[in-house]
Image 1 (cartoon, rainbow, N blue to C red):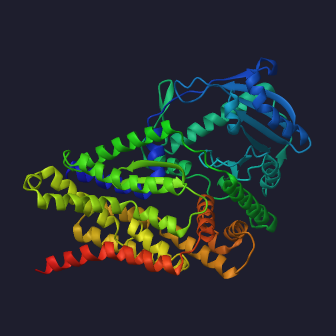
Image 2 (image 1 turned 90 degrees about the vertical axis):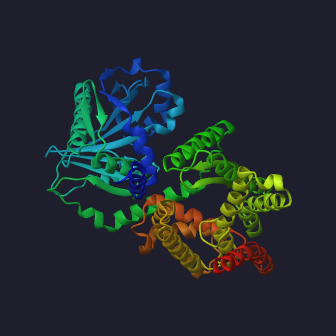
Image 3 (image 1 turned 180 degrees about the vertical axis):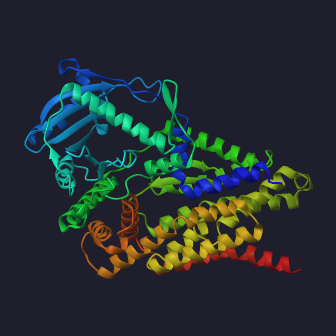
Length: 551
């Protein structure tokens, strides 16, 4: 008989395979109750000043390109109890027959959420739309052409639309929409999107609103929405009876590469905003709660959970204080349900010695505490009978020792990789594959579902690690003194090896490769002394364990 615990765990495996980010997005979005949108025409003079402040710089761009303001509408949010109103400003270009929609929210803090999309209507009643990123979650019927860019520039997006709309067999209609026509157009687009989502079993109508349906269609939609933009330009939807030969043109390829380069470079220049203490504490406690609930579900005794948490905290505090000492920024600790806990921090240039100490500072204190308690128990009969203390000593030593084994991504594996493989990207990748094989073998041998989940999570990153190794090899082979960052960006956007890699993955590849190539390589002295200390910590317990096992 299959237990409820096994059903839950295998369900987690399926969700992990889909994508961890999708899990979070699915859980959050599925519980939204959506209300119907009501649109109303609005005179320009009736719009709040805060909204006009947001619109001003975007409107200035449109006017400079020859667009003229026509009308605007206001509508509520689909999310129930969200009382902010949204505005859509409509502009038209007489000579080109291009319609521009400027959409924003009515408060200045949301200025980054203002977007401009461009549309062209055809005699066939088909329509072409061009967005500047984040249109990957838009659902439209097949009669509508939807192009998604990632230029980060409305100038580029407008230029791209003039190329996008040149579809074979389609004749452009040049006619401005009336105020009533513009309202009807938006209502039609909303209805078309909702109908299409209903047909794909994503939404269902419920009285005065809608509710998401937990189905394969919904999971696919959430996966695409959360995963984000895959390419700098992609056709999300197109008519079945039309072709788009311009996609193969050299001008399109140049535009594609240029937009990717600009997007990645912009991402590298942006520095993440440090979390404040309140957010860090909230994350710490919520992740800790999730950790306890997950381990409770899989049958870990509740009496053992405080010991596990204490061991993990001491381990992560070792990493945390080492990072603090070496000047890492935005340091914090959080739990990872099912897998343990983690300490994180940011530092642009990290020396190999610093990395070595940070990795070692996690397992070493826990091992020493476990050994110290064991020695005290041997010398004191009273302590020897303390079951709780004995359990803590064993768990503190064992968990930290296992973490010190030379298996990536454990701390021991990171130490070995830092000292031995920093100069050799291929060896780093092979070490990753060997580690994955060991984890899979251990999961099968021990029949451990937790190790199996860990192996699945690592397996999903094989392609990324392979691409990182290739990129590092290529950059090293160039033997150039030019800027590493620019060379890495050029490589991932022009080399055919990375043609099918998503934009988000390219961003990650460039960031990792720049960090690794800029990092100081370990000296021979550090390799000799560091590996000597590491082996002294790892070898004796391993030898003793083998000898005891053979008795």
